[in-house]
Image (cartoon, rainbow, N blue to C red):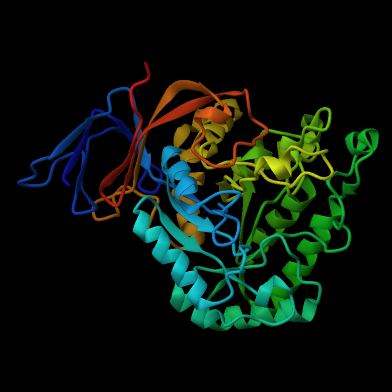
Length: 431
């Protein structure tokens, strides 16, 4: 379909575009920006007057719960949630059941996702067999099956020698290793940030040094192997200082933060609100402020949804027994806009914030996405930056209805999502 998106404010961080410009789409690609290509005859015209047009969002952490956890969510429900939130490309961790450690499982997931024709899915392969931290997976075969990197999800590797060998293997073939920095023992059994709030509530704590000690180990192994590492879900001021120093040193490291952690702190647990049970836990206000500063100065490369749908049976429990996680795909854009509005650096414009969930995310993953230039894939998100919506279970497409932002009024509402040149989602006019 040939599509003409007219009168929209186009923001493309990759090219620096930030002005009212028309966008022309043909054959699944961007055919023109600002000016129609010769002989272009639109089959569909979208009037984006008063709306913002950006590349489709790239989410670097979205658990789709298939295979194995269909009772929590299905591929259909979560990909519908993705396009409803303007997300056109998703990276999914390997902690499914069975674990994504076999090429056949990866191929099956890719085939299912392609058949739905809703969003692009990019699996991370398991770094070790069964995520047990003992034997390395066949990374080359998993890459051929469609994996774009290798991860342990939230399960640390206890044997440092195994981690070093995994890094050596990955470096040999140019693969990226995705690690969430948390010491296996200091963080074990903890359910809240170690501090006054956890002490007052009687909750076992996860100290900041669980993150920093793991980072020291990772950086030493990076120096020895030269492998590229992406750090997942950074959560502390001290940890970000170490990342900042590593980047200055020249280590090939990137990192992300969960959108929830940009806004919430440990005090938001309130009176044991299980919707605020997350991994890593919400930390102190100084840590939240450091995350925002890290986003502004480039220490933090990407904002992700950390989408982890949890069903009622596992969430409506006492805080310590509830499963960690929250739905996030439909909130990623709004929570990013909220940060941009509240940021002291808001004068730099919306483009920088949009970049954290589009072009910067695509760069980190190594995907041909997150940009709106002639010849690029026609993955587009059109939204109303001035709209406000209240988060409620009934309006979320995700099968997971639990989020600490229930009842919050958030900015930005997606009106249209285009994936590969076809209109995957259009919001109906509300009565």
